[in-house]
Length: 305
Image (cartoon, rainbow, N blue to C red; front, side, top):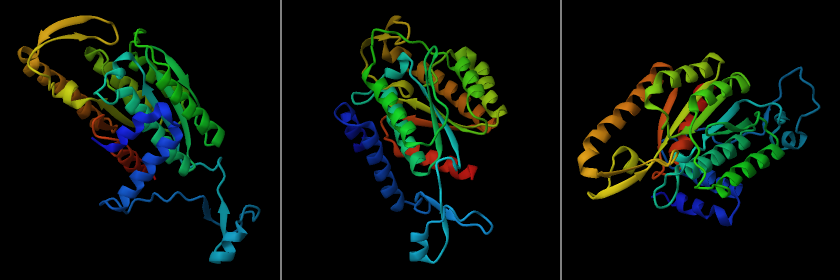
């Protein structure tokens, strides 16, 4: 298991912003040692001065060192607007023995916010289950970043397992398509465990995002070992639906083949439809750490430049 996860499990004892910085620093260090070392992860705070522009914001100290004129980039001069959307329904609290899908999504989102902060890009945050619990517009101010980190920390600390929260992904995505500033990058973290019969409606909602000129990066957050490969001991289990509380008893060996075939068919169909609709779809296994998420974010951002 990625040691980053173990470190991030200490979130109850630390600051999520600090932990996100540690993840990003480790990721950038790894990039320089990998085949992706050519990525631009040096986040410029200046841009070259263009003839005819006001000289008001020229950094003269930098000019003295480099003999080149750069103007300081301010927060309103953002290159990208990103809306991070996190499914916080009860099924997202399913975990391995170390971390839940929701915790993984929150830490991954915090790390993306840290990258966006360094790039001086605007970022907003949406949290939903059956309802849209939080939706902020994209901003790039330090105060806004602190607010987003505090909201993510609150979701980590205030979970009540007794409160069952269903998912209403389809309706929420339609709302987000309208509420989010046009031409944003919408990054969604969800286990996609909505009604399997409503896949057509799910893609109508995703198409609504595309229709409003948004780019979409969809992270399918999953505990692959259990939820996809169904690697459980061959003994009786009582499984509990985390959103409804419904219980079922079963013998794993009797249903494993049918379950694996069904769940893989469902997720393969989502992947294929995403490709057909030019939506970036990425499985995010909670057992594999955060580099997989940050790399896909950078690849997507690079394609948008």
